[in-house]
Length: 258
Image (cartoon, rainbow, N blue to C red; front, side):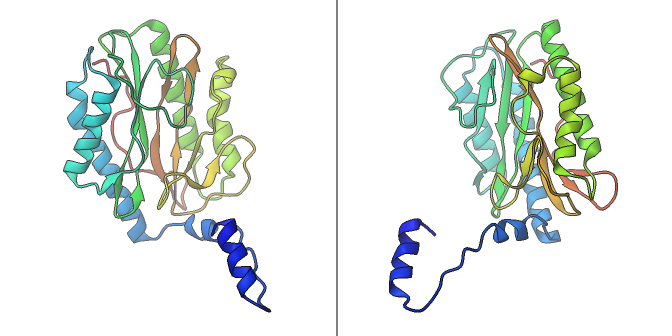
């Protein structure tokens, strides 16, 4: 509740002490049941299907806003109750901006374009990111794409029941740092998803707490070069009791040149 609401209740409840509940609700929501995971799976399928419909039509001259609108419209047409968050389409991404608005800037040949989007289905939020090249791809662009893909593979491989959240981040971050790009990966590796788009657990540098079975998280490393552009690849996975996580987003992670 708000501070104002708490103050109002405390003033009226004579002899009743209010006790902070802390993050207990968030902790209870970390592990999902079978019904929740099924809804999340559907949200991810709708996101994948929308991207499959939109990708063939993306070309130089389209604007960021136009591509975002097409993704949103497809997710709704395919059965999403709405988008999970405001769709992000950004050419030449130089940083991890938490809420950039798509603009009317036209996509240009040689651009790397990052699309961060997701469908919401019966309250559950998908969250995926793909970066594509428009028309042609330079060697440096392919190099950082392959680096981010390798880092993501390392993070995914580290996901297992009982692993520390910080260790998953470290597995991916070590790959990027070894390539000399530590300064160009300045956000956490991922986060939980469910009834909110960002919820516990957080996968970041130094994060504590062990992951367990039936915990859905994103894995989204990125490398962003100032003045040039960047790459981010993001998928939703579910930690299992075994040594391999189950991936819910299925769109190829190969670099697509449109």
